[in-house]
Image (spheres, helix red, strand yellow):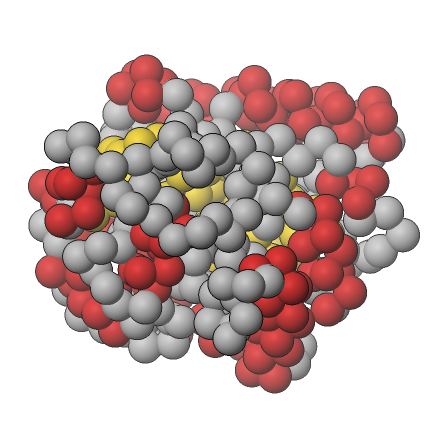
Amino acid sequence: MEIRPLKIGNMEAKVPLIQGGMGVGISLGNLAGAVAKEGGIGIISAAQIGYREPDFDLDPKGANLRAIRTEYEKARALAPKGIIGFNIMVAMRYYEEYVKAAIQAGTDLIVSGAGVPTDLPKIAAGSEVKLAPIISTEKSARLILKYWWRKYRKVPDLLVIEGPAAGGHLGFAEEQLALYGYGTAVYDREVERILRSVREYEAEAGQKIPVALAGGISTKEAAAHAFSLGVDAIQAATRFVTTFECDADIRYKEAYLAADKEDILIVKSPVGMPGRAIRNPLMERVGAGEQIPHTPCHGCLHTCDPARIPYCITDALIHAAKGDVENGLLFCGADAWRAKRLETVKEVIASLIPESV
């Protein structure tokens, strides 16, 4: 089967690859613009996107709203005709305002997970922006497909499936991660069930719903396997961290290059969700039960209680993005240990996309 461009409504990506959103500060305008320039879809993470603004500590919301436009314009300057989107987590405080700010900036696409984006069509109503919910199971896929169709007579413009080998926060309970494991065979069946549900709603709506698969896609062979399941595109994030164009500090990238397979752990986020990260002194302190002091709350997630968390996820992710890899949370995918050198975005894309499957 020939690998074809990814069509999302009236948009077409020459390369059927989405660069996954990575926050805080890992996939900003530079990385997203570089990917879009090469024909893929570049995604800017909106999570505490304004962390480098001088007034971030005093007015994080205002800093984030400004930075949404700044980072979008940076990406657009690099890829005037490319497809550029934002990843905006449902769990974020001020979610609706951040979505509207991204639309006003000119984004082509909103990718949204870390919760179920039930109200996204209402928030984006009246715009031409394409909407892409992130799901991980057949149950969550059917929930969003059914809800959007019944309430808005709309289906997703793109559906992103994030599997158990993905990085950062994971859309699985710990027992589900144990069930699916790191291998593909069991989760392949879940992907097939999701695709059957998608086909039902395609028939109902009379339109194509393209599907992208993410999680552990770090080689051309893994990408070919994903396409063989019947998806239209892949999403990759971890592979782009160790690129010259990635927005992260060089010390963050070096932590990936130095990591061994045994260094990659399932950790519990302060907000109660499992995630995947590289072992470091911070994770060892948290694992030992230490309570990590944190800065005044920046209002990142509406599910967070600052008085009860073992550490602040905003503090930890900003430390990481700035290169403080001992005190930072180094989110990563299951294959982060495979990276052995810095590459260009162009090289990464060429190493992932097979000519056919």
